[in-house]
Length: 154
Image 1 (cartoon, rainbow, N blue to C red):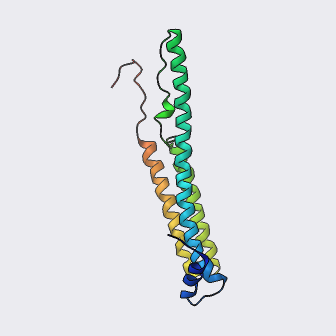
Image 2: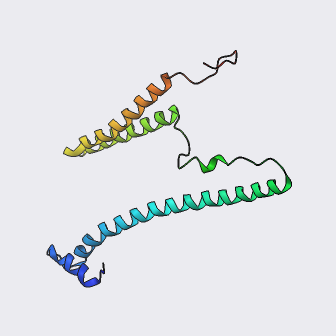
């Protein structure tokens, strides 16, 4: 598909805007979509490149170990982790819950002081905060995976 400046200006004049606002109104969604997809693709490519370099380094180590007659090292766990960096701890949910709750409460108070009828949109942030606080409560009540003192597996 060949896009030139004339077709963009024709799209901008469809809404009776032949000025800069019309062109920006057309270009902003296009740029947002292209950048969103581009950033996602860049992240995937960087992850692939990192795993490829780890695998190449591991392959060199394996070949050197085979030549010397040593035991072959296992594959590094970084190749199998994916994008998951860490698991959330209950303290993370507590912090996020308090932050979102106070942000929502602050939005409600500030907008009510200005007599704005949209103050109740702050309840969205409060609800997100309460959900995180509930996750904190539920996760902190779950028993930890601690082995028994005698060393047996449950």
